[in-house]
Each structure stands twice: as C-alpha cells, then as structure tokens.
Length: 134
Image (cartoon, rainbow, N blue to C red; front, top):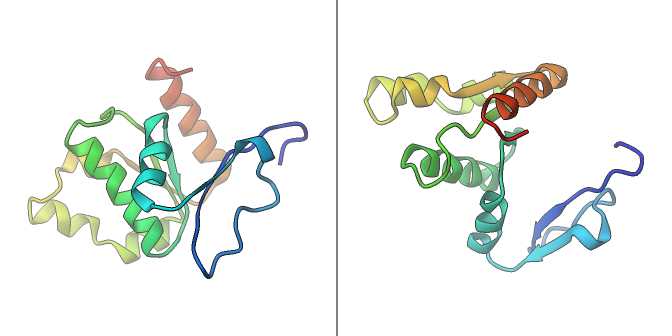
C-alpha cells in the first residue's frame, strides 16, 4: 500500500463475506446488493482489468468484460492482465476456444498473462500511454 493513497472498494453483500478489507478508503467504499449493478459500475470507468486467481465470481466478471470487449460495447483496446499465468492457462483452455472458432486469435492475443507485478505494471503503463488514457 502506498502511504496516503486512496483505495476504492466495491463489495457485494453476501452472507459468507465479511465486507470490504481494511485498505479501502472509507469515502470510496461501495457495497452493492446485486451483482449486475456492481459489474456495471466496475466496468463503466474501467481503463484496464487486472484479474487474480479466483472462483466463479472472478470468472463471471472476467468473462463479462471479455464479452463486452469482443462485442465492442466497451473499448476493444482495454488492457486485460491475468495475474497467475499457470492458473489462468490451466482453468481455461484458451487455445481450444480459438481452435473451435468461438474466440478469435486476436482476442486471445490481447490477453496478457504474467506472474510478475513489475511486468504487469510496465505493461499497464505502456497500454494506457499508447491508448491515450494517461
């Protein structure tokens, strides 16, 4: 955590979740009741997506963003970084999606797999600078 930095948190009210973590800035803490409203507000101002290994909720949000990119509903050049290369390449057979023609090679190639946080940060800065989002 960067001292003095503000952190946004967008939680979902679930019976088995304890709420937002301690690092979220209080005035930037949002709690949602419905998944679709949370996803909408997460993507609405999104300049990039960095996904870490997770369960069904993470997969749902990742594939929602990928579908919106694929269909042109959000910017096609939105950087998507999948942190934890082995995890993401094991749980999703990306090559099979391309092979069966359900995902284009271009869409697959737009995903950035890494295990290195510095590498992810450099890629993110490069994408945002080149996309005119800096």
